[in-house]
Image (cartoon, rainbow, N blue to C red):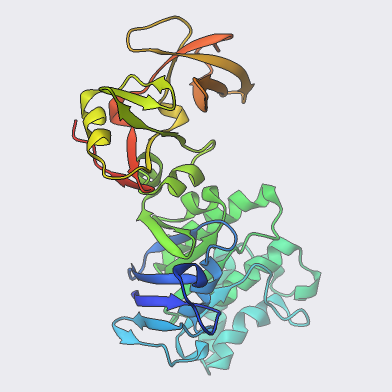
Length: 365
């Protein structure tokens, strides 16, 4: 197992980069601690796979260093880094049996056959592949093939880390949850450093202890699933995490009032003062749909909004609202009546996030 450190790392595919936008990976410093279960989360094109390929040695960074346990490995090829990588599509030998596929990485480094057998049986048991060990890999289902591919990464005991590049892409949706849970069990059992790349926040949250959210070649927040949800550090994290994502309102102070466009917002003095003292024209207030208080009748401190429609999702509903000229979404639970026509909204100060130039700043309550 290894601690993986990225030091002043950056990468571009252009020969003459002139601006930050020319970089697939903008300069970053980051640490994956030994034995941790991590996810690298972000939309397509944000740099996730590029970063993973740099860590594994498939790609050499334009600048900066990759360190394993403090040792620079930039010049080391993938086979010298003891990294296992599981790709979107299974990488296995179709003409071999499942047993031989799992044994191949061990036999390749001359492990004694008795230990090969012991280790293959152990990994096959964990992945529920024991009954398939004598079958040719070409006869397996897509999810069974991907489990074999995962097993090839797990079978070596000297592996420094396992990197998963969207490994459940080809898996039937009904089986994804089971395989995610299986990966979590494997991590807890073997305590291998694991980095899981995905664009699916549910996959990231169910697998990882900590998630690195990438946006435009940068890690904009690194934290637990709860931290990303409750205190997103960047507007993109607020938008990307959650279903639906965070509501953002562009705000200013005018004549002692908090304004979003031409609509006055009812907020506490601490929020008002923080916005008034922000030195930028790019100021937003963010609030999760889950944290908006929705009332069917006027309440003290409530802001009148139009109810456009509601989406009933069984145990809760998403209400689509218009406050002034701004569209908002709020979540209400199944035991709460869904308002029609009009509703009165309150934004609890402790649930509001203030974002200046897209990054969160603290509000003194």
